[in-house]
Amino acid sequence: MNRFIQILFLSMICHYTMAQFVIFGNPRQTNIVNNGFTVGFTTNISAGSIIKYGTTNSLELGYIANGQNTTNHSINLSGLNPATFYYVRPCAINGADTVQSTKTYLYSTASNSSGVIKVFFNGSIDTDVSSGTFPNLSNSPAAIQAEMIKRIDSARSKIDCAVYNNNTSAIVTALNSAHNRGVRVRYIADDGTSNTALSAAQFPVLFINGLDLMHNKFMITDVDSVNKSYVWTGSMNWTSNNINDDYNNVILIQDQALAKAYVLEFDEMWGSTGSSPNASLSKAGNLKTDNTPHFFNIGGKSIECYFSPSDKTTEQIDKALQSAGGDLQVALLTLTKNDLGSSIIAKHQGGETVACIIENINDQGSEFVDLTNAGVDAMQHTLPYDIHHKYGIVDANTPNSDPMVITGSHNWSTAAETVNDENTLIIHDAEIANWFLQEFSQRYCELKGGSSCIYNPPIATDKVNSNNLTVNIFPNPASDRFSIQTMGSDLIQLSIFNNLGQRISFHELNAEISEISTEFLQAGSYYLIFQSKNLQKSEKLLIIK
Image (cartoon, rainbow, N blue to C red; front, top):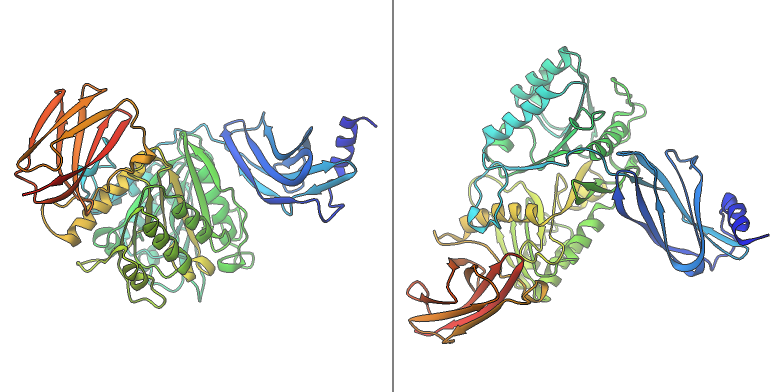
């Protein structure tokens, strides 16, 4: 029997035949495009590669095989449909022995949607730390509510909402109007909160989770449309207090693949794919399974999506925190998960620039005291209204790393991890990371006080490109003034930061040699961050007076 026929024959069986021949860990999905993706996996001994796949768990589309022996396997699936979910099971063959992964995995192709992402904050932001772009600058409670109602009014076929609490009658009125013009409206709410606005609902509502929380705050519109499918999510409940007072973030994403993932999660809680819920088949809390794709290519951005408590969300948040290669900020209602607190402390002790704002520092198991005892720049939010955010920002000022934002409904707590229904996005994108940094800087400086405060941590110079950008500072130490000689670029932007990470001043250097007065600087050490196009460099300056 030749090698190719042997692979075909054994791949039809694809079962375990020797205990010591194993596939390590979970397979890796990469190179996600609208007609395919690559699946990679690892075996402990060299073997041929097989991928079985299909649009159902039966893997009805067959398999792709590669007879070349390797321990690092990679097979590309092509000719697939856009915004479509595929079940995948990796297998490997070594001689007469075959091995398969312990389960099938669900992956998505990219959609043909626009991938447009809008970010809203209901509080003011600090545009001084902008890298050149901004989130939606009409940030206000009224603008957020208007955008939500606009999305409801624009829906033409389907609206699915899973929202913890809702006392805003204008939203329910818009949903009633959609229902009455023929849009299928489905709504899931938590049965332990007031949800006063839902008393006027003319559409079906399923109240679930008597003991635990259906804590989501998401909406999907027109999932069947390539260009009109939207996901609305974030930290904001649909209540007057959360919209108008407490600090929250909202993300609106136009992408059909992500919308389908959210609908799959909704249907699991709804107990049906139809218009009416089926309470007997509804699965919520720890009854749910990990049954949605997690990796998406949305408008060229890599985005991860996880639903709690089935998807080990805390583990994914922890991986994101541990990836920080320069700076890390978190703004949270609560932090009680010890593993996440430990990772934040480890990053601080490893030399990263870390800052935390936490609202509820006295929750049982709070990590706040451990953070402050370890020297982390952690502050309790003591001003009026709550920090209701659940976000982390990784490497916003380390652009050659992997800047990302972690956000959603998931508090960094044991309940969110183990029993509550939650959703979390991890967005790998420098621009969006900077948008969240603008929000963080505003909240940070409100607590610190002082009109000159800007939270903008120094760029980690070993993480960025400083080639071909030469900067000389003299004298250093300086007294009343210092000069800067630049080579390698015509226009260089200079930001001066104190040792607290607060930006003191900003300058544009057009000449080869520029002179700067120190009259606005007190004695001490400062970081000078130079930036020109993709070139960045950091220098330290000592002022003696």
